[in-house]
Image: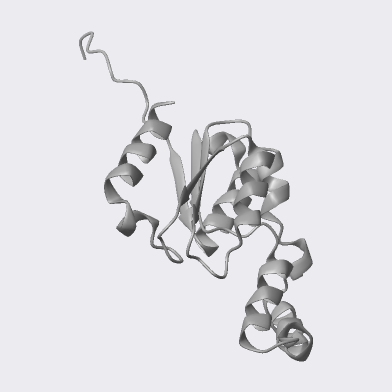
Length: 153
């Protein structure tokens, strides 16, 4: 086979947007050694909070009125929404990270991004004019450069 030198193993950067971002944080908790870095955009910190926010945006007090929907969905999925907590996973993360918040996103609160970034010691980037899941469209060049920078860390 000769003495050919192989390049360093590729880095694995987990990137997730919205629910994919929350799932990415949860994945880091399940398999922390699998990933070298994480980038999330528009992720929630607690499922209960974002679900309540979603229902309340539709109808004042909606989280109370739609509680049965949440209850039956949790029974069908066999998941307690109160236990879906990406913030707890972020607290255990000790590698490079970037948390992106889209400033015009009216569902995912800036507080979620700040909490995730602080818990994980990740960088926080706010894209002021981007709506929900629109960061890469609004600021495509910077988005790519920031992903590349995380991969190189």
